[in-house]
Length: 301
Image (cartoon, rainbow, N blue to C red):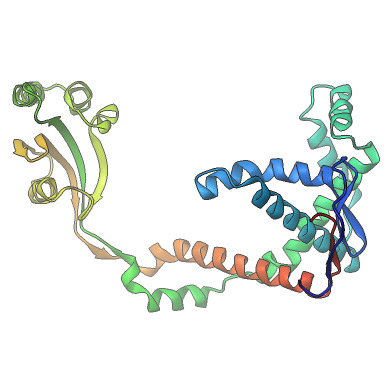
C-alpha cells in the first residue's frame, strides 16, 4: 500500500456517502456513479468491449481523486474564475434545458442543490485553468523539435507508389459470373457511368460507392489484382480479367509515383504527433506530482 493511503471499512452507497477522502475532502458515491456513467461509453471505444464494472469503478474513482487533487492545487495557486466566465458557463448549461423548472428538476434528480451546482461549475473551470497552466502550456513543441524529428525519421515520410482504383468484381464460382462481367463491360463501353455499372453489377462492398477504392498503395490488394492495377494505363479499362477471386474490370483514375514527403508537407502531422505525446507525458508528470504528498483514504474494500 502506497504511503499516505489507507483503507477503511466499506460504507453504504447513499449518494452523499464518502467513498474516499482526498486530503480530508470527501469523494461521494454519487460523484462516483456519475463518473462511472461518463466513462462507460469511452471505455467501450478504447477496449472494444465494456470494461468489467469493478475495473471501471476503480478507474472512475482514480479520475475523481486526481481531479480533486488538481482542484486543490488550483486553489493553492490562488487561481480564480472571473464572474463573467462563470455567468457565461452557467447560462450555456441552463440553455440545454427548455425551462428553468426543467433545469431544477435535473438538479433534484442528481440530488444536488443549486449552490452545489455552482461549486461544480467553478471546480470544472478551475480544473481547466490548472491543466492549462501545468500541462498544456508546458507541452509546447518548438519548430526545431519538428525539424529534428523529420531529419531523424525521414523513412516514415515516404509516400508509396499509389493508384486511384475503380473496380467491378464478380465473384466466382457463381455460374453467371463471366456473363455478368461481360454485360458490365458492354454497359461501360456504351457510355454508362462507371459508378452506375459498379453499383448494379459488382459483388463487393465497394459497389455502394460505385466501385471507388480510393488511393491504394502496394500491399493493400491481393497480388493478382495489384499487379493489374499498377501496370494499367490511367483512364483506360482493364478486363475482364479472371483471377482466383473472380472476374475483374479495373479503371485507374490516376497513378502517383512514390516520393519523399517534404518537411513542410509533413510538418503539421509531426507537430500533432509530438504534441499528443508531450501532452500525455506532462499530464502523467503532473498527476505523479499531485499524488506525491497527498493523503488519500479509500473507504471501500
